[in-house]
Amino acid sequence: MDPPTSPSTAASDSLPSVNPLPIVDRKDVFFYQADDTRYVPRAILLDLEPKVINASILQSPYGRMFNPENIYISPEGAGAGNIWPAGYQAAESIADDLIDMLDREAEGAESLEGFMLVHSIAGGTGSGMGSFLLERINERYPKKLIQTYSVFPPTNQASDVVVQPYNALLTLQRLATYADSTVVIDNNALNRIAAEVVGGGDGSTSFDQLNQLVSTVMAATTAPLRFPGYMHNDLASLHAALIPYPKCHFLMTAYTPFARQGTNGSSQLVRKTTVLDVMRRLLQPKNRMVNHTGQSSRSRYIALLNIIQGDDIDPTDIHKSLLRIRERQLAPFIPSCPTSLQLSLTKRSSYLSTPANGTNTISGLMLANHTSMAGCLQRILDQFDRLYKRKAFVDPFKRLLDDYEAEFDHARSVVADVVREYESLEPDEDY
Image (cartoon, rainbow, N blue to C red):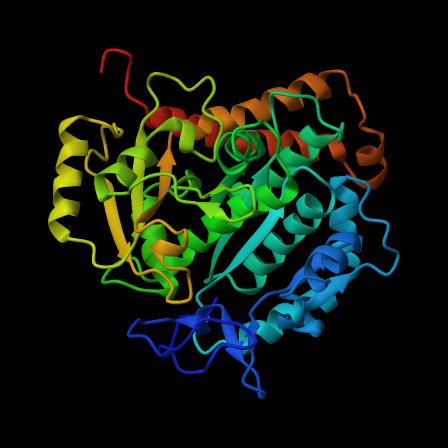
């Protein structure tokens, strides 16, 4: 990710190179302009099997935007077999190619600030190759920030990947050690929100709907970088606002309003939005992208940043909304950080549809550091313990890792330490 040098327009093959509307659009944070004036994402696409990249990305309307030199698909096309060490070792075998891609993009940035990694922690490629990349980026660029968007597996239902707890634990250890922040995207919550809100409430979900939710959240989290205000306009300031304790860097999100799909596929405007309405809804557990089942009564916010997007937002409305939230104690904080409710105002992209065409006037994203993340991590530890106690399905790990028991023990110790750190911040029972 490259901090901007000059304002200009958003990225697309056909968009003009000069923004016709009076909005600061830092497209050069995530894109660079090629010699033919097209905007090319500063992105690297990696997979060990070809289906997703070939069918879902390269065949999409956005496929030709990506730099072909920054796409790697394993020639064997067999994937990692949902095994963490298989994904890790596959990445290790092509380390020179991966580092070359990283270096090429890093050197093309005028002032490199950090990296963003989007992956799953449950399968083989996202967990194993993702872990390898975390280690190598941290080793090669030790002073640059690493932010991940990590998809967590369902913990309240059986999985098709029987070794999912092993994969997740080994990846969590790398996230705890090498990432500066991890935005947790919980599959439990993702499916619930997609079924209840985006899909129209009939209980059905599709991968397109799930991807729509994730892309909406990612676009909102990066909005202050692309359409900056007076504060929180770079990655470092976002991290400083949200992570007062380095070990506790697992963040949860909430977003409102999601556009409900109409019968013809278009989005439907479902409610009038005000600043207070948006901020109040962001604090409701049902809108969180992390499963809140089993949350302790002692769970508290460590830090909270609301990113409000809209045009001509009245500062008086902001002030009144903050007062109302504090008066009603809608966002309880840990005792050591009692006033960590922060706000970032950002403009909407000038290329989005107008409210009359189906987009809400005001939308909001909550980025929060919350002690309930201890429960999310503990559920994965519990799954691991149940499986590992019986030494179930350890054969591929035993075969591919030099000392799989030491690897598991160390990973469990690191993640358990993060859980204890979160729990230590919660108030006593009589607080």
